[in-house]
Length: 616
Image (cartoon, rainbow, N blue to C red):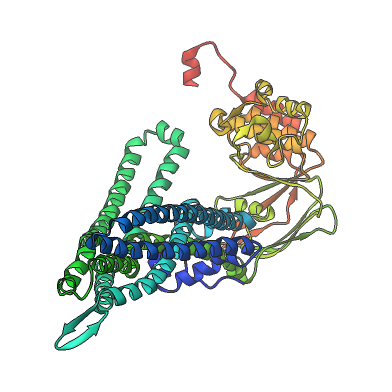
């Protein structure tokens, strides 16, 4: 089952308009429903009680305001001093409530965000979605930004909104009663209207809220567009950093500068739209901030001058009106942040949607999916295997073969026939298609790509990855490095470096083979694993596979003809008009020693003449 959701390639404003908040709550609301429910509801109830206590304190402050000004008006000196002492107690109570609200609100925000982020990360990493998403949904910008930043913006403000809305409702209910009793009545067209300030407060709030919605309705889309542009800018900068060496060597800095300049301009344009729309709201909110405290004084003053109400009632009415306006105009004061929240809700929901659609595409493409099942023996069985693109377009059709344990198989074919895709299917990375791949149930599998992954940490952790750095002895790690021509690195086992930057491409590939030597997997799948090595380096690493890992099954992709001598079998992909087929494989028999001597005899000999060397 997949969650009902929209295509994440659509504009995420559309997600918001068509139930994104409801979908978001299905995703994020699990914090209140699962194993964390007791924790979540405890913090929620405590927060609610603190809001109620805060309203009570504000009511007593409002009551104090009336009593104090009545005492001033009556020149009641003794009560004035008593009122000052009472006020200090109310200040202490208000401060205590504020501190407790802050602590419990932030704790609920932190724990909810941690839960949601953990759930997003867990689903992103599960079933290779972090890899498959880049293939099936390339237009989905910056999933990592959505997980790290949008999940924060989608959770933290919502807790504030919950506190704010609850406080607004309770405040409105309490202070409506204060306004009704304190402001007196008004005469309009000959009719006596008791508690007229209640009606004024409601009408004023309707006008302000309507104006806010009218001026700010485009702000959500503008914020969403700004977030997308910001994510695109981060993506492009990251791409330049990751490919810094290649860009520098070919002199591409100017071209990258032009591209980044265009992106920066688009980011600036998006920010300009946000500023323009937010300026209108600021104009409205600024005017409201000045008008709201003064308007009730102007309207209730005639009742004070006529003697209908006291000075205390006048000030109490003004203070109550402000409290009611803060409550009723909550949407006015929080609309920009609400717009930011809605935009991030759309982006988080779209990411979850992408996960769901990715899972659906695996089941729908080609009418099924490639399944990995246990082998009845120690061999690798490929049965009726069809490989498709994520959109269902056929790549490889109906492949069948058996790869015996210990076989060294070379996969060849023209460029674009799907060699790399096929080995990714065997490795369990590519699910789109149909058919069965049967692997020995207890076999360990290692995938060695053209550029081996170098995790952050010590060289020991790099060689042991993904197992812990204490999984292998120093002796085995050192021997693997020496065997792969990296003797100089033995002394750096516990040195922490960015090894993907420190080591050359060829050295990184040697480290990949050293990792194989240390871990000794049963099945090794290689994709151009020696492409950065010269012929001697390639010979040395392939010797490692043939001699030190003789019992391992090897399935590799490579274009160099000399690789054939290190394999006992070759599978070739043939392109036809509408499909690619794999032959059943042919055996390879080579005298590796004779072939190597022949290649070396044909290589140019070193010379002491620099000119001759250059000419050669």
